[in-house]
Length: 117
Image (cartoon, rainbow, N blue to C red; front, side, top):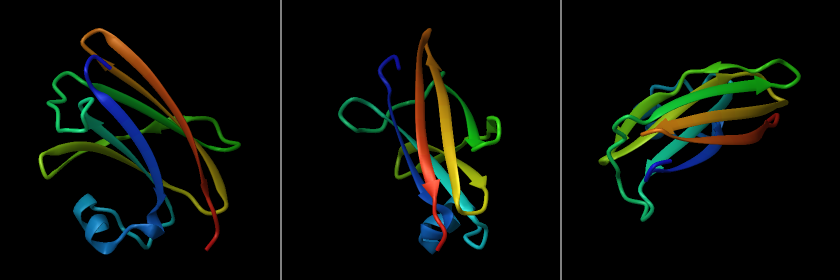
């Protein structure tokens, strides 16, 4: 999106290490899924997010999509965004993200499965 590369990944909250969960302010006793959106340049280096806007929704199937708040996190000079979905396993989740910057737009869709432990 206008010089910015976005990558998404998902991880069950229970799989987060204590250091990462603490840094992100996530309670690992809750059940659910973390969505991570990294923002880098084409070389994988830090980039000023400037006027980047991210709008996200999540659907825990078969429910309808709901807005998902993404929080900006700064780590070692890099900018990431995280969203936390609290839900019980088993669950199928569908994430949709719309990114806009400088008049450009990109849409990202990804799915994740939260499995029982």
